[in-house]
Image 1: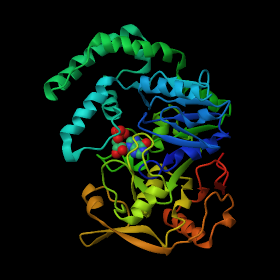
Image 2: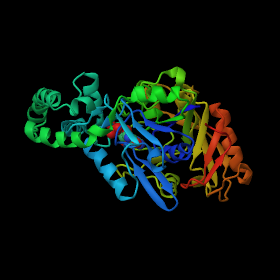
Image 3: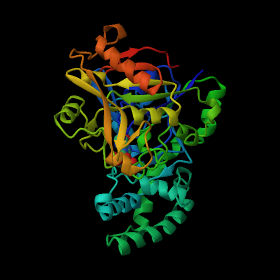
Image 4: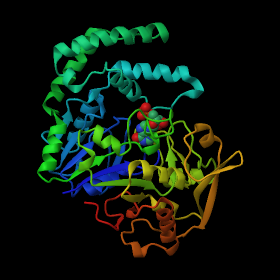
Length: 428
Ligand code: IMP
């Protein structure tokens, strides 16, 4: 029995979907613990690509139980569309999905408020995915959120909705000058969703604790990445949840003593979507090359991702705040054709050298990366599944990453497919 948390070490899009899918083979339960349909987890099975937003990637394997934990925020329309889309492709969702009755619901006013607020912020906008994530978590913390349990109780739902709409419509109409929402319209639409979701609602904390008691393997599937975490990330250019490993406990009701491993997923270079500091960003031909070769376009919004070199400072910070026990390095093959590959090993800002990632945004925004340079291997690693088959220079690159971060590499991904993987260490 083993319980493993998978988290992203960078700004999301590290390739967690593939790693989760791979490890799901040995897991009994696959659990999402934070975020919402802002996530886009790409999984390729054979020649078929699936992009999952809310439903744990485990759903693609038969006989697995998938859980959406209390830390997740749920847009019922998006969730039902995802369920229907999967059904159309032959993936049945019935008694294999459990949704926490404590998870919060994304309401249409959350998306409207976010859209207007981003517009008002101008150049200070976060560059969100526009899914209403931030305002939903804000309501959760303000203790006015609507939970799954509230949504499926018509009386409670109407009462809460009425109070919330009074406030939200005031902001929308008076502050932003746009149309508010009509109580009956929202009520009718959302009680319709509630009827379809009712059968999935459960006390998932009890369910998971019982599964642990029975010796089942649980995989906690993080969304986004460490530097998008609301506490540990590049605040305020972050998402509104705890994407780091600690979120797996608060977001599911499984205690920290029950977690055995934390696998950090690290892309062989770095990408970021949306605004915010990115010290190793390349706004040149190499950046464009990484974007094209790595197909670096947002799985949720289609936005081009900003690309740059591997940053040992941000990644080793991630290793500490998550407590990585192993790393999975993804997309190594994207670097195959480069003459030179750089690794950032420090920052310089106003004459001072930084060997650890600083918390001040202005340092991250204004610093010069200090690079170590390595000769590229200039040979194909695409699809390799044996470590020994990797070119010496690629092995050296990986060894240097391991040395700088101080965490062992357990998995290396050399392509999108399941078999394009080098397994060095058993995770379960
Ligand atoms: P939000 O999560 O929609 O509030 O967006 C906040 C920030 O997180 C923005 O910079 C988004 O681009 C980024 N973000 C949210 N979800 C993801 C993801 O799954 N991958 C990469 N970036 C994300």
